[in-house]
Amino acid sequence: MSSNIKVEFSGLDKLFAQFESSKGKARNVTASAMKATVAKAQQTSQKVAPHRTGYLRNNIMVKPVKISGDTVTGEYDANADYSSFVEDGTYKMRAQPFMRPGVAAAKPFFYSTVEAALRGVM
Image 1 (spheres, helix red, strand yellow):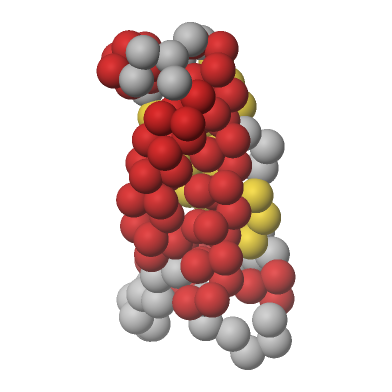
Image 2 (cartoon, one colour):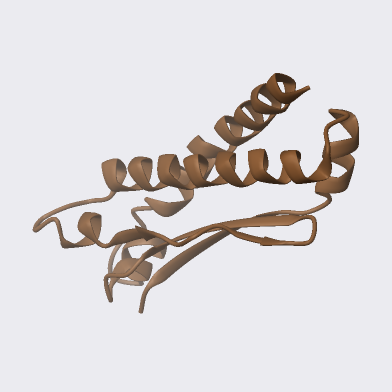
C-alpha cells in the first residue's frame, strides 16, 4: 500500500488578478513554483523518513505538474508498499509521518515563490 499526497491550488484566477499579470504568464510561473515546491516537499520527506535500508526514502517520487484551467496540481508519492503504515501507524506501531511534514514545510515556500515570481513579471 503506497502513500500519496496530492496538493491542489484552485481559484488561481483571483491570484492572477491580484498581481495584474497575464493569465498565461501567471499560469507558467505558478506551474514552475509548484514543480519547485513539490521537489522541496520530496526532499523534506526523504530527510525525515525513517530509514533502515533506505528503500522508503529512495521511493518517494515526484509526479509531473498538471495544469487544468485555473488549477495547478503537484503530487508526490511514497511508493514503498509499507509507506502508509509508516506514515499513519498501525495498532502495533506508532505513526512516523514523513509525507505530511514535507507538505507543511513546502507550503510557505510555494506562496512566497509565486508571489516573488509574479512580482518579477509585472
